[in-house]
Image 1 (cartoon, rainbow, N blue to C red):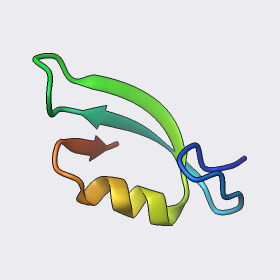
Image 2 (image 1 turned 90 degrees about the horizontal axis):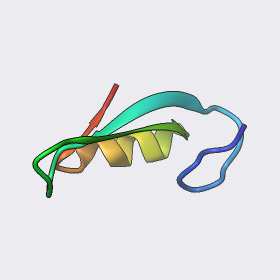
Image 3 (image 1 turned 120 degrees about the horizontal axis):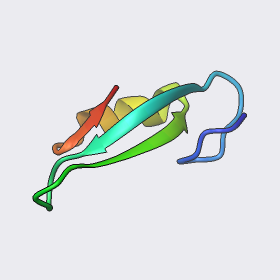
Image 4 (image 1 turned 180 degrees about the vertical axis):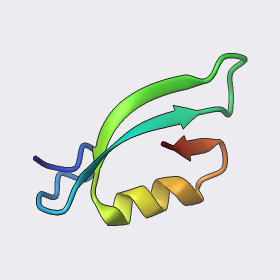
Length: 50
């Protein structure tokens, strides 16, 4: 499997990503992320990883 954000393979994990900024209703997506992208997403305001 490969990271759905950057395309790198290897050490990836599935997450439910919740976007809470910019709309009345949060949007959720299931993504597979590498550790670097997961860290980048978790540092962004309005994005939650589960």
